[in-house]
Length: 402
Image (spheres, rainbow, N blue to C red):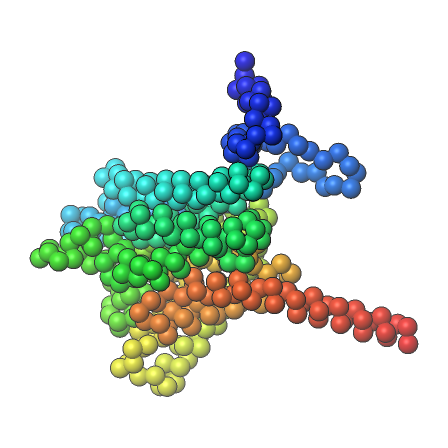
C-alpha cells in the first residue's frame, strides 16, 4: 500500500476528532489538499499558501547555508587561527568543513527551537479552536534563526518565539490577521527583554561572550557598531557585499539576499515596489546625512558623525537593511496592499531605517523598528490611497454629468 493511500485511510480515521487539524497539517505538507472548488466563479491554481511559504523558504536557504560557514569563519578569524582575506567566494579559508561544523552546531538548534516551539503553539491553537493549522509560521520559523546572533541562548529564543506567536499573531486571529510581522515581534521582544544578548560587541561572533572576561577575549563588533564609535571598520566593500563580516546569522551577505529578492520577484511573491522604494528611501536619507556632514553642520566630535559620514550607498550593504527589506518589509499581511501605498510604505521603511540607525548609536540597526512602525501605519496609508482614488473618480463622474 502506498504512503499516500495509507495517509488517506488515517485521515478518514481522524476526521472529526480533536487531532484532525494536526494530522491534516502533516498530510497536506506532503501532498496537495484534496479539497478543491468546483464552481465556475473560482480561480483555480496549482499553488496554495503552504507552497507559497515554501518558496520563500527556498529563497532564504542560501543565506542559511552561508551563515553556517560564516559563523565558523568569524569564530576562527577572531581567534587568529585563520587570516582574514578578501578573496570572495573562492576563499579556501571560508569554505572549510571546520567552519561549517561550527555553524551547523550553533545554528541548527536555533532552527529546531524556532520551529518546535512555534509550530507546537500553532498546533495547540488549531486543536483548541478546532480549525486547520495555518501555514504562516513556516516562513517565520526560518526567519527567526536568521535574524538573531549566533550565540543567543536557546531558552531565550524559545520564550521569545512563544511571545511572538501568541501575542504577535494568535491574539489577532492567526495568519492573515496580525498587524505586526511575527518574526520582528520576536526580535523586538529579545532586544528589549535581553538587550545584552542582542547588541554590543560580544554577541555577533561565536565564543566572544564566553571569553569576554578572559585575557584572550575576542571582539565581535559589527561594522555598524564600529561606525557608531567613529572607528575604522577594517572591511572592504566587497567583504560587505559578499557577507564576510560579523552579524546576525543570515543578514550579512547582501549578494545572496539580492539573489533571494530577485527569486521572490520572479515568482511574483515579493513586491518589487516595496523593495525598490525601500532602497530609494534609504539612499535618500543617506544622501541627506552626507550633505549635513559636507555642509559642516555636524563636526567629527559628534557621536553621530561616524554613521552620518558613511558613504550613502554603503548603508545598503551593512547591517540587516537588505534582509529586512527583501524578506520582512514585503510581508503581504503586514505591508500595504495598494500599489501606491507600497511605494509610500517602502520609501518610509528605508528612510526611517537609516534615520534610526544614525540617531541611535546604542543600537545602530533601525530596520527592525522601522518595519514594525510602518506595519502599524500600513492600513492608514492604504485607507488614504483608496479614499484619494474614490475622490478622483467622483470628480470625473461629476465632470461628465455636468
